[in-house]
Length: 199
Image 1 (cartoon, rainbow, N blue to C red):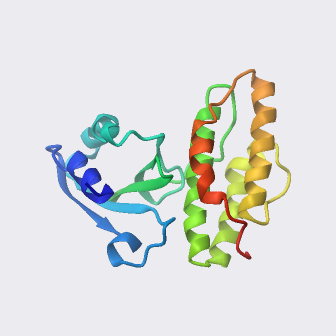
Image 2 (tube, rainbow, N blue to C red; image 1 turned 90 degrees about the vertical axis):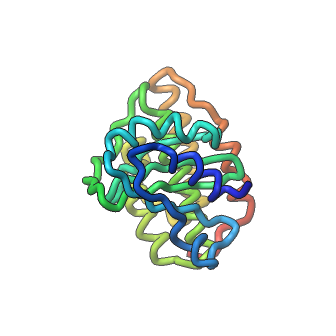
């Protein structure tokens, strides 16, 4: 059973779901091996669907599940083994960008998920040679995630962003006396085995 069918058959049975379908490069046939899987979801009762999503998506065995902090509409983001990024986009549900992270001992795991989701998304853009978009997103990453962790300059590449983040995360773990699981990082690593393309 392919991934699109698994996602659709997991979510569509909920009574508040009006429609769900694959969109973006995977639907258009222009995807690379790193492209994410985007699904447009329409719901009669978004709150009910949002509450049910953890249960509905459990069969996919997600490594991470979170709501996008920086999307104009509500978007549930998953990372599953592969590594593969999945986005459930609710275009009828407007969302306001959230403030940069304020790291503490309780949210380092959420920051970890946000970082690797962001990196996997940028890896897909790198495969399409979208250098300007990558540069702009690395600036945004610096403001919203790296700078709050104490990184004082913006990364110039995906690989540099990863190195900066790892060091800053390690320091944050010491500062807050907590340990973040490396399971997600280990799962994401194969996507970054090749050197950065020019950005």
